Length: 393
Image (spheres, one colour):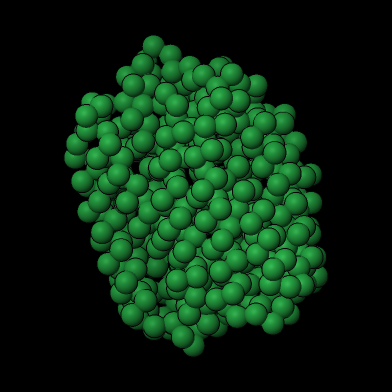
């Protein structure tokens, strides 16, 4: 694959990641309260439906990864855009709890087919030895999803209501994401061209005897991290309100999350090649520990809230890259879609149960330090598990 083709593919996938993450994942943080009020359901019920979507995404991810290995990303991600549009349309039409759960079930399939793991597997097939740099560039764009769609969701809620806002989001999936997937993802036989310089990366640097244990520890590390990130992103606005910030200020602070993801990825892009992905991962996961400590100390101070956004966004931004690069470094890129899908499943499962398990954080008055202390313990365990995984290399 030529260099020019790779760098046309990256911005195309970057735009689809912004829209897919923004519409399917981030928008509920702003639209959720209005949805609950109109439907007459509890926070636990709403986020139970959302958690079901993430659970279905976890169960679907290995199949999606293997489908990309066999058939390429163009067909899979294009079908994902159609599924995402259908899911958003169905959510906009719900008037009952059963319909809500069914609509979010469709969204779960769409998540597995359109978000980072599918994009990483697709990019791996077409980027050769440029994979790490191309992946970082892709995540630089994807990191803007919350920055774009939290304010967009808020304005859509004010101007049109939550139902019409979701219909607009559905139209974006068809009008923007589907053409980009069809036009810019090259046809693929499912094989990966590493090039001569990438032969070692194609094999990975772990001997077969050590791979199973490393895979398990890495899956545990990403699962803990995914749980924490899911809780903090889905409940971030109400959590910040519970920490003494107004709704407008909480949304404003939340918009820094995306740019800080981008800033972290820019730093990785600039200096990351000097370090192994394993070292970058350890630093990024440790940064999340510090971020949760800052959130625990927050009590209405906007400056401290901004510091949390910087740390949390920077950590999550780099961890996203690590999720795509460390498995390639350890296990190689042969059958990479399947590897990513199997590795993503526990993390997606953790993301699935997280919003429901921490549903009290969706109500500002019930946000407590106890929940944050649990998240802090998980952040420490994530660092330890990652260390056990990568020391085998």
